[in-house]
Image (cartoon, rainbow, N blue to C red; front, side, top):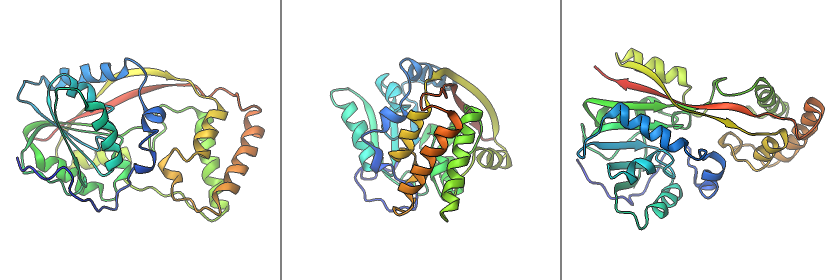
Length: 277
C-alpha cells in the first residue's frame, strides 16, 4: 500500500468541519454504550483477523473508529478537516494502536488499489459534492471480496425524526427562502447512493446495530440553529441569519406554545453492508 505523508496539504470542494471540531462530539456524539454496540455489529459482520485492514473516509473525531482501534486492529482514516483529525489524535495519545490518519480528499485517495479489507463511511456522503468519485475511490482501494459499510444518517430522509421536527425544518427553509436564500444540498441523498450501488451490481444488506432515545426540546433545537451547529447553516449570509433566527424563534413560540415542548424521539444507527461482485 502506498504510504503518503499524513500531513499532506488538502484542497477540495468538500465540506470541512474545522469550525465545529471542538464541539463535534458534544453535539453529534453517541450515548454511552452505543459505540460499543456498533463496534460489536461491525466486527460480527467483518469477522476480522489480526491482519484485517480497516479504512474509513471521513473518520473525523473517531466516533466509529476509536473502539475498533482500541481493540488493536489496523485502521487507516482520512478526513479533509485537520482539526477533526487533531481531536482524534489527542484521544489516541497514550494508547498502543495501529491507526494512521491522513488529511486527504475523499475524491482522490492517496492509496494503491486493493489496499483495504473493510471500508467504512458514516454521515459523509451528504457533504461531498462529487460523491460519485468518492464512491469510485472507495471501490478502487477495497480488496476483491472486501466489505463496504455505508451509513448515510438522517440527512434528506424522514427517518428518526418526528413530524414536529419536520415541520420545524420545513419552516426554517421557508423563512430563509423569504429572504432570498435557498438551502441547497451539497452532496448525495441516501437513495442516490443506494441506487448507484445497485447499478454497479453490489449486493446490499441493511443492519441496525443500535437504537436509543434522543431527548430534545424546542428550545434546545432552536439553540442548535442559533449557534450554527448544522453544516447547512454555515453559508447563510450574515445579513440574513439574525433576522431569520428571530423569525424562527417567533414562529416556534406560536407553533409549539413553549420552548419546553418535547421533541424527543427514537434514533437508530443503520448500516448498509455492501459487497461488490
